Length: 454
Image (cartoon, rainbow, N blue to C red; front, side):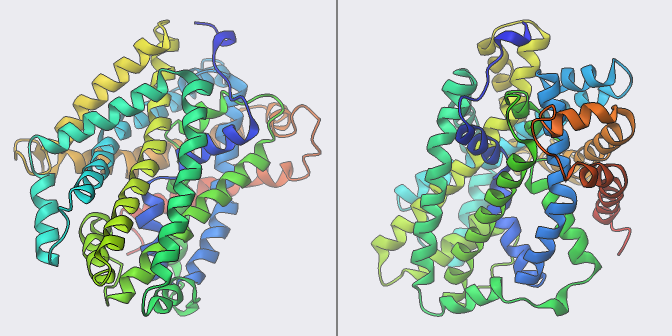
């Protein structure tokens, strides 16, 4: 397998939509809105924007540089830049992280498909206790969650085997506009509900009294994870960039799309929740327990509209989950077919089968059996903990040190300025952030996750 027969994005809009799709996921739809609501509303959003500028965009550009310079899978791209030194293992760490996340993320993605089906069949109508029990019974079922995990892998597999332009780019050009259309439809419907203004105010009214050290650290963490740093997705997609792609401009555009989806999600969730007197701060359970009940109550007088909105919402979730899963799948597919020197279909099959097995075990650990729990934590939760709280920040931290202190400055400048064809006025700021600021911020986020700051 040679670099010359790798794929590439065929258009600028395809590149932006595909890469943004890899960054936009379920975390944008539930985590960002409830964090914003709890931690100062618009004040948190402003802190988050600052975090993106200080941490998210510089880290994304760094992975862009590594991916485009290497023009290969993430592990090989790091190996090329490191000249075979120990730094190459950072690339392998990102591939491993992406592989593990692919397995358990597909479980939650499969839940979204189940809820699309349940919405179509009208199975989500009932009181809050019924909805909570529905999720509990479904998630602990030994068959249905595994079936939906396999189903979403098969959809993802079909896209990936058709390559970068024919698969990922073509699918992204359909799914990302669809995601925005669905978001806007539900936002409009939610904002027309009684007392919806309270929900909008909850999200967009600044409360600077809530802004403290934890808000800054949480915003930094959200910017890091929301932009898919440290899991190989950004680096892998960048390997398909052309030499004319403006890396800084692309990172900025993707960041804006990522933020826009998150804010629209808040405008979708909060007005509906406040219209029925529900505080949308229930974390992960918001999607599958709180919101079905919110839709039932908010549109009780118009049950057909409630059914449509509920269905559109879970289609939206499924699209967001699938775009992220595609990027994770591609990290591993590109690794296997290039390193094993096999064709794309065989590489994709290895990923689909192996990650579906991981997903099945993770799913079964959530209630179907207690034999997949260790030290009081289910296998699913262990995957989430190890990748999210250890591997991701570690990979991001090491990448900053790698580019800031090991890779020759001229290589970074050439990539940043497209070999002198761009002015690159911000290169000095980028280099300073990567060398001195980003490593410190990531380290603080890492410590905060483990409660060091209380």
